[in-house]
Image (cartoon, rainbow, N blue to C red; front, side):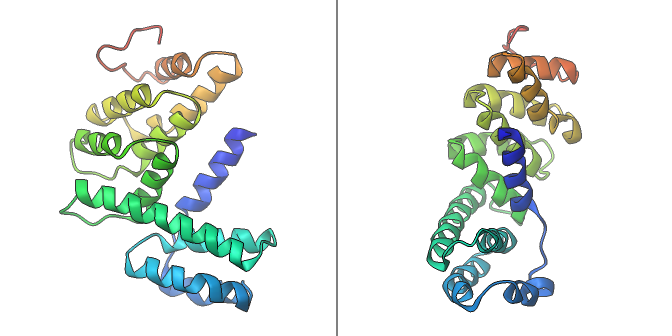
Length: 210
């Protein structure tokens, strides 16, 4: 159940969105009171190049659950704050290229799990070709959420990035860890088992039984 809930949160946060094509549809799906509360937050987010789609999805989630407009506004404002902090971390580490919404969402989720900005920056520095880090950071976040220590998770994900392990393979790590956790294995050991099952080489210094 925990895994399903976490994946659902990640899914709605990561959904692509075209602001110009769907803004009108969004307005028709919420009441005037809620729109009045969240509109300033959304407008500020758009000015700051934050993931407006994810914020709108959070609004719609609150409306579907019949939450009061003021509560929806607070939650969305808090989420916008997380996105703003995540984007600042990204901009500091990636000053010379555009930052996409998926990367902001991934870093915000990782920081919510207690991953420090310097860990994110180190992961960015490990990338060999300047490609998107959305998937690696999401994998890191999901591993930490499952109880893998940040040091272990970041070491493995950085190694994956440096050695150009296919991202579709790396994305299977959290699900494989779930299998180990279900069998009573510790999070770190479950990660080691997941890597062996996927034929992902262990980073230097990691013991085979970890």
